[in-house]
Image (cartoon, rainbow, N blue to C red):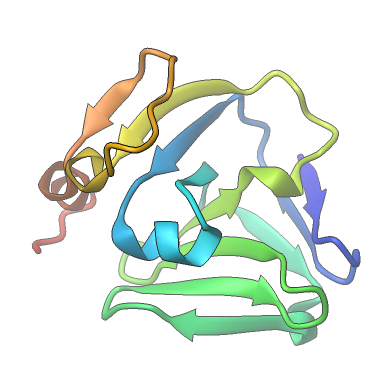
Length: 134
């Protein structure tokens, strides 16, 4: 799959996937203005236009990337696991995504609710799945 930012100065290629997740953590909600809808890109991600990417160290374990030119949110990068979680909005030519899970469900505010039935993981469960402690 190939995606790009608004100004097309950053392109990202990743293996085909049909699933996406929503993160409800406070940092993702502040960063995106709502839940962060993302695909799990894993380790096999090709990024072109690195010079246009700004990275913000948002915690001890993660960085968030965005385009310096247009501001598009690109990815959440889990440093210790070398794993990318890519904004679903980058992939405009794909329409068959399936909503798989909601993470940090214990941080989700009460003012919105998704209708889809998904797997729900707490903050602790998410960190444990990557072998990390909180």
